Image 1 (cartoon, rainbow, N blue to C red):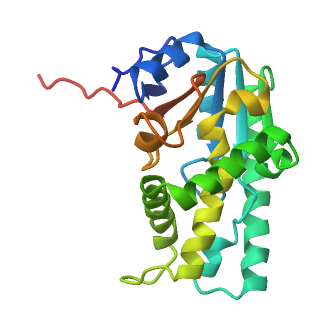
Image 2 (cartoon, rainbow, N blue to C red; image 1 turned 30 degrees about the horizontal axis):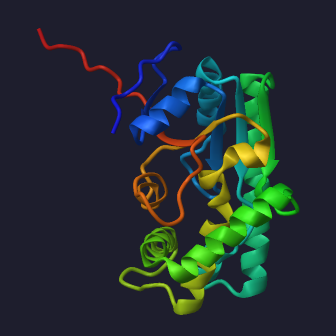
Length: 239
């Protein structure tokens, strides 16, 4: 893993590209993708605004994409009836859209784009990448295991203590993740940029699978990944 990058803006975030290749994509400075999941309290409007400002110091363009497909999955896992789960999902998506709008207003709209995931589903590039993900999930046990592990992780927060997701809930969780994976595979093809770094505040279980191995479904050469997290506040030295 590469060393933490120095920042040229106030010490708001630190970036750790996953690999040397991801570091090279980062250093090109073409594009940063920020993915936002509804219901994730990490992405307050202030943190998003700060992240956009930080991203513009390193990248020519920043885009924020929020999930709005299969969001009801987490509420179904929590035991809500289907109709109620859909209503709550719609409410969460709208709240996420409002936070993103406020963040862009605070940070300024220069070189920033915002999109819903569903905006991309008609695109041939998205359909091609999504089809590749679904095919690989059927044939690649390593990818399947990592995706199901990630799905269990986000469903677990909605389940009763000690309970696991049902097969139907797990399948829906895998669908949710599969809808987002094209942006970890080839954001340049989706947004028309030369190269792109997808970022998140933790390393995801799928990172090693898509960026670290030499076979199976892998990210495109111009696609990078970096953990971008709030920088640690230096502690005063005791006298």
